[in-house]
Amino acid sequence: MIVIFSSQHEQHAPEYEFFRGERVPCFESPSRAVFVAKELTARGHSIHAPVADSRTILSQVHTQRYLDFLESSWSRWLAVDPANASTQPFPSVWPVRSLRSDIEPDNFIAQLGLYSMDNGSPMVAGTWVAAKAGADAAVSAAELLGGGEQAVFCATRPPGHHAGADFMGGYCFLNNAAVAAQALRHNGCDRVAILDVDYHHGNGTQSIFYDRSDVLFVSIHGDPRTEYPFYLGYADEQGEAEGEGFNLNIPMHAGTSSERWFDALEMACSRISQYRADALVVSLGLDTFEGDPISKFALRSDDFIKLGARLKRLGLPTLLILEGGYATATLGVNAANVVDAFDQT
Ligand code: OKP
Ligand code: ZN
Image 1: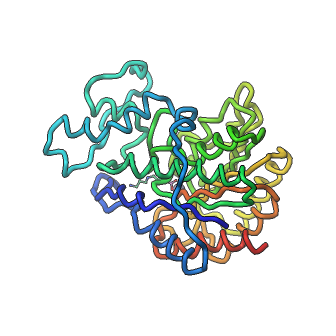
Image 2: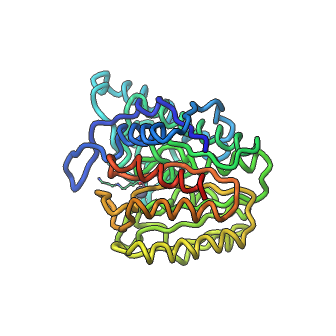
Image 3: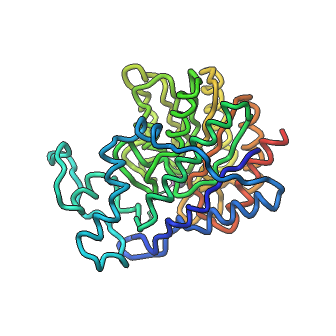
């Protein structure tokens, strides 16, 4: 299948994030995409740069305020103090219940809190350019499907599924899967299914489409009672208004075996088949891998072959989008296993 990859991803290379109050090197690193691109190239796939400009679709998925904030963040951060050039901005205050989120303070850190769900999305000078290239890849991939291509893989980072209409979070800034689904709708698909198999619930994607029936969201993930993002991803979230019945969460306890995980995948796939989608977007997080340093499922590298084959059996034009996966050295093999199994089934 066609692979879309932008070297711009390397512009997003923060030095550190926080873990239990300490600074630690970022799990979500540029080497992730390097391993993926390398393994796909070694297996004979040709890699293409994105060609589309995602701006129009982005403004249908995210609010214009948030997009403007994200694009201007780095210059705003430098305006606070030119010495900030060698530091990373983090939010330290958030408008939780009883505080106002309908106003926009002038203070940059206050704005950062307004547009963030956590302090886990380190930002640097090149973050906007890298994230925008990921959204451009998603729109380019949707156009290729529209042109008759059966499947496209976007080897993008940073990931996107935690980013909502007006907030960043969990290493995510722009929601690439939501952009892909919206672009497919724009290009004439009446119904688009999104299957999110990342270890972490795709709270951003769910919230963007929660009141819509034209995009079905189905997710298998670590139970939010114990796993990030904690505040969304429960089984009783089934959609609202027009979208009632078009959101399916399948939370699985931390430590779930690969056998049980594939049972959940069957449930997810039967809902998708029943929906009669025109196209499928897969939020392909590979942090379900047994060796992942921040996740607690137990899939082995061979299981990703099984996953690719099962996705192919849905028989839909399919857009695969890389989300998480932090066992960096094995990430390329795991991603290529999905891609090759899809191609060869
Ligand atoms: C992003 B994706 C460790 C914080 C972990 C939350 C996990 C984000 C996962 N300091 N941050 O869904 O793989
Ligand atoms: Zn994840």
